[in-house]
Length: 289
Ligand code: ELE
Image (cartoon, rainbow, N blue to C red; front, top):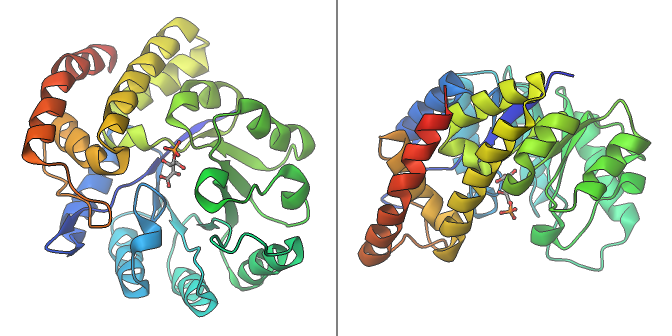
C-alpha cells in the first residue's frame, strides 16, 4: 500500500490577514521536503475562523503553486460551503473535505447526510469526510460514512480502533488518521497520516514513510516519540498558537503568527519554548535523511 503524508498546513497571519506569500513559500517547502499533499483551511489552518473571501483567496493562491491540495470547505453557512465547492471545481486540485456542521448538537442524522449529499452532488473532485468529534461534537462513524459515496475519511481520533473500523467495513475507502500521536502507525496500517507536525518536521515524515515501507518499526517509533515530545511541549502553550513558533524555528523561516481568538505566544513564553526545542530540533535533524 502506498501511504501518504498529508500536511494540514497552518495559515500565516500578518496584520490581521492571511499572508499568502508566506503560505505559498511554506507549502512549497513542506512539499519539497517530504509531504505528499497539503490540507488547507483545516483545524491547524484555522479554517473555521477564516472568512469566505479569505478561504477563496487561499484556495486560489495555493492551487497556483501545487495541485496536491485538499481544501477543507466545511462550515455553517451552506451558501458559502457551496460557493467554495464551485470555486474548487474551477481548479485542478486533489479533492475537497468537510467536517460536520458543528455547534448545533441536536441536528438529526438525516440533516448531516443531506449536508454531505449536497457537497457530493456539486463537487467535481473527490470528496473526503473530516471526522473530528473533539472539535465538532459529532462522530461521523463508519455506519454514517457507509451511506455516502465519498472517496475517503480523515479520522481525527486518538482511538486507532475507531480508524480501523472504517478500513474493516469499507475496504475501498481511503482512510487517514489525523492525530500526531498515531502518525507512525497510520503510515503502517492506514492510507497515511494528516499530522500537523508535518508543518515543522516534513523531512522526518519522509524518513518515516521510508521506514514504514521497509518495516523498520524501531526507527519509525523513535521518530514518533520525538514528534510526541514536541507536540506535548507545544500543547502546554496552546498548540494552535505554538505551532507557529515551532514551525518558524524548525523550518528556519518566519511563518508569522495566528489570529485572535487564537492568540500568539507572549515574548517570555516564546523564549521559554524555544529553549526547550533546541535538543529536539537536533534530534529531528539526526533522524531525518
Ligand atoms: C488534526 C488537528 C487536530 C489535523 C488539521 C488536521 O489540522 O486540519 O489531535 O485535536 O490536536 O485534525 O490537528 O488534532 P488534535 O487535519
